Image (cartoon, rainbow, N blue to C red; front, top):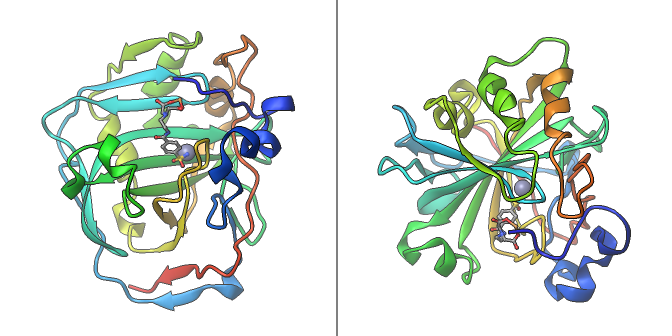
Length: 261
Ligand code: B30
Ligand code: ZN
């Protein structure tokens, strides 16, 4: 559901801290990742399970993004890498910009990408998402960067087609392609051990500082046209959600690691 926040004006990111004090905290996301400042590290292999096969999935306009969830019994999970237990898939969603030169939340060497996909997982031993978000190691989010190109990405075909059915806030539809989850949760297994990782927060209110971020180094692509479809959904105030990325936050002494497989 849409909380009382937006990406412009009096409810924009610079005002979130008035209602949500945590948004003013010291471990906020997103950040600018400067490659010259990262600490290299060899983590255990990051592993995906339950990703293969088909998943019944749903797509929602929640007023601040396009969100995809599954209530399938076959739920993807991850383990290994910088996390020391199993985390279960909850939802995935997207962040984009008003033009192709911006849209990603995390930046690399101060460079913005056109879109960022967030795949959100909760720590299984806490029993549920609602319990996990009360704990400081409750969530792991995978971040995938996308650069706009002329060439469409087949992975987005069915989603983009169906975005026209969720223009209004609160709309919810079944995704016709049962392979969407497989394609979005682990799109590029060959590059899955090449990531940055750091401790941070939810990038939207309530900005809880409970997230182990895993940002994959290698960008993927999406076409200008496919990206434009995301900008056509409406936000809570009835205007088009042309952009929904939070500006970068201070690193404040945190260490960003890069996995060297
Ligand atoms: S992110 O990946 O850091 N962008 C939440 C999860 C991941 C991120 C940001 C927020 C989250 O769980 N937020 C609280 C729940 N939301 C979710 C929702 O369904 O959409 C409720 C809310 O905002 O207050 Cu509307
Ligand atoms: Zn996000």
